[in-house]
Image (cartoon, rainbow over all chains, first blue to last red; front, side):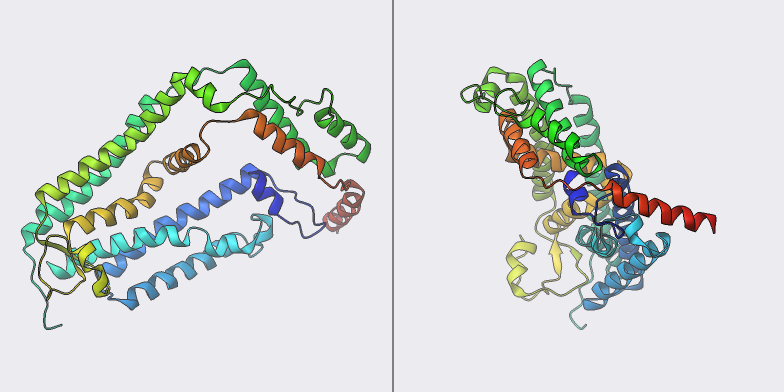
Length: 114
Length: 246
């Protein structure tokens, strides 16, 4: 909590004016939506039958869409809700990848292999 | 692909799906078992006091710029002066955390319980998978892998002609182990994920050394550059109010 506050910068006066708990909550929301979407994306990719690189490209596309959606939800002013833009863009990116691969494999096997 | 294998649907019905279901159920079970076994630590008066002092010092550090310089200096002096400041730990009085842990067996027990609740299910599942489901292809990963992964992923299949993306059930187990973490954080709430990271932290910093964290806070307070923020906030408030009035 302390470290995230320290890093935060306010546009107006360069002084951190963040509520740590709210920031944590916002990050949690991002994390959850990313995880959820990576699972959905995995199942989708598996059912459609993406193979190899196409699947990973699909994941990146979905994550990009998620980022755009999150930004739209934040009213395109991330400074109000997060300490930096990178949070919206990259948080939970790699964590979701494992879930994506798992559900991708699962759906792909069920639909296309057996 | 010319070399497509046809897998028996029985593998899907009796290996792939059951394995995933079992992993999910074990994860949920582990969550509830660790919840049940969690014992609330009996607070020690000295520990609580030191913890509170650290929290107060931290609050002062975070809110330093919102109080006038004079107030900040007096507060900092209250915390860090060398004679009777709250954060000043006289030499020799510092307790050895290792010794404290040996004198308090509950702490060790607690950690052991936490670790066991994590390790036992994993070992059991791994043994179960190895014993029942080894020696055949169980799944196909939808992306190509290099030959180097063969020994890891195709454990128990001694055929060098099979494409590496066909993997045995053990790899499916590992995929589940890592991939289900996200699912757990969704269905069990964030408590689960936080628990894991906390466990790691505990393993890293064995035992909580109060005097050390007091010293760290003291240093942090000492080096802080005080800069009062509120004069500028009047201008900010003015601009905000003007915007509202318009």
